[in-house]
Image (cartoon, rainbow over all chains, first blue to last red; front, side):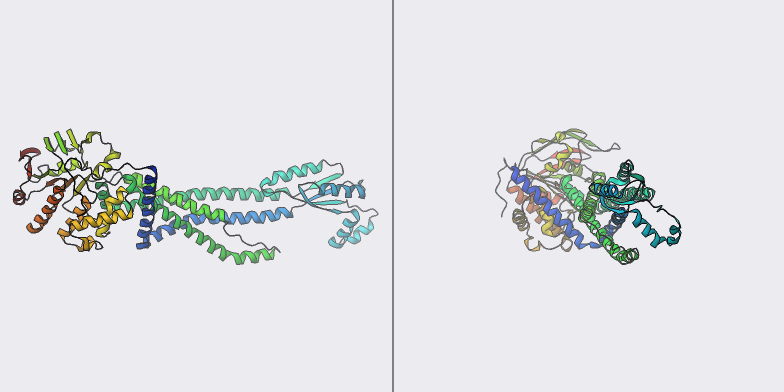
Length: 329
Length: 223
């Protein structure tokens, strides 16, 4: 009934009609929307395979991402120590109390320095007496042997690293009033060096596991292609382009990556929840109110984005490698 | 519509499936291709469907010289040829409707257009009531009709059929052939490979006979 009457001269059938840009774009979009839901429906109907693959990808993504979160927390702790770092400026004996206080105010105004506490020679003596328990010994001495001290709390940012601290120290040493400027730099340096190693380690681990994700997705898609060999042949026979055949596999890879990212996110959050209690307890023992921080939005997005990208790339590699082998005979 | 000029096809290993075949089918013509098994019927159809390329000679379909069709363009050429297989080649995890809709989805038609054309094609082959069923639940004859609906849904100017009645009883075979004649009546060129000589004789269309890769008989454009 609906078959229109043709005459022998002009049956041009399904020949691609020339379309405008708008129509082309619409048709392109339509195909993607179709594939989007089609592949999602396929996964929905047989979720077991997808769940397994997503779990493997999730574990592989969760390891480096989780380490990244822990490292971020460690940096947070180290930043706390930075704040606690103090520089002691031992002033020369000849420096008067007025000069010392003037210097304290001058240093206070410097941007690198947070607060300055001035401990006069008398105060130092008092402190020593009360804290050391050697007060009686000092009574024997005629003169107060202790120098006046300026205690500085530097305001050096994490990113500037230990070098900035060193520069500040150097600068303080050149002051004529200063006899000795002291800071336990070694300790801070070691912490930074260790974190540097861990940070690189996270990258190495991340790259290796990223490669693993690529292989897992690639292999899963390769099996999917082999399972649907007949279907691919039929589609090729009735005029499906390579792009048309490729598309559902690419979307499937994308979904695996996305679900993998979600699994990784869940694993990390659950692990952090699991660790939060003991960490808070430990922090409490050190008199700190430090709390574990979860994934920030940016890292979570990177996790999803990385998962999707790896999924897409893995399926792209598999499809490119295996689709050409399947031709109708 | 179909023009073969001194076409030979030699497979790797030296077996010559077609030797020096020349033939011409005008648009709107219907013809049968016969011969014993191994005579080259399938190879000839494969050359038209661009599944194989000739070793020698030229294949011109729909005024397109296939020697000049790049691999990338093959899908677009195939969309103008409706192919029907002996083993139907349906997708068993999709409904009848989805099977027939596939060529339209590939061509990028809209949702409504697809629904309209699929139902028209199913109505034509008498399976409109079974659009929601899965092919596995249909009989052999019905499956073949789904295959035919899929081949014509795109309204191609040329239909190829490889032993379309190979597994069907005479009654069903005549029905299927009747369908092909209907499509031919509205201007579609039809080429059917078959060895059902009785049926072919009854229908009285042009017959091309192959023997060991050579065209040994042609009853001419007897329409």
